[in-house]
Image 1 (tube, rainbow, N blue to C red):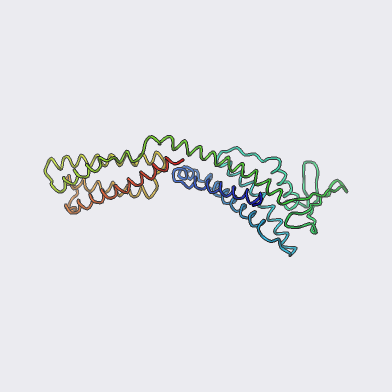
Image 2: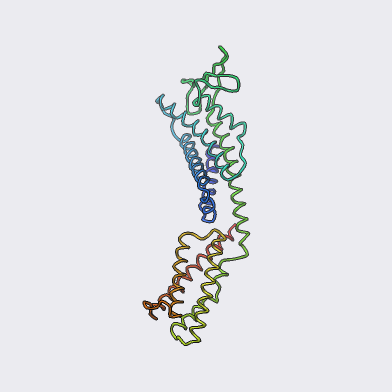
Length: 316
């Protein structure tokens, strides 16, 4: 495996980790709250991925025999390197991670500007250059850049594509790694904050006892059973309010879970209506039993959600 292939493997691996982080609900919800910054992250990530694929394909593919296409290949590679630098700069900016172009990467930008960016009148400091790519020198490996300036002076620069691609990927991967490390640090701090407060502890084993007592209030509606069953139902409601609050505090309350919880609270309200004989014209004992069954069964689903989140917080 060549150095470029190794660097690209690292590049795509870091990209995958960064994407996994920002697509985790607890972080995505925060990021999307600042929509322009979120769009900058998405644009920068997509552009980095695109340029990585462009570099990968360039060094894997055959260089064209047709002269016109060889220019397209050359222009395309240099432009991919150029916008890859911009994308990394803007991704770092969006995550508030310091990023500064190294002198080597600045040199690559200078080559791009001189050869395909502004070749016909290339201003560098106080000197104006008039440049062109030597057609006969063009190959998959690079080209020679001819530069003319100061009324007759000239210079010729050999551009090695493998060398500049290796240099660029080394610098880009270093910056990418800094972003990934910052995101991992944020993730570890978030998990540590809630590690000792598992969600499953909120939905404790006494819930089964509470459901049983609500059931007795429905099946055997003596005054004492109804009174105690109603108190147990209020305890269930309190527990689920606490559960919802804990999910919100962790930024783990997805739209789907919120919808399910809203339905769950509606089910609690309907059973409360039945036990207090409020708004029960369309609510029979059979209906109350169905609602209770719904509450018991969906409680298991919420326990699964709690366990899944707790386990993700225990992962290294």
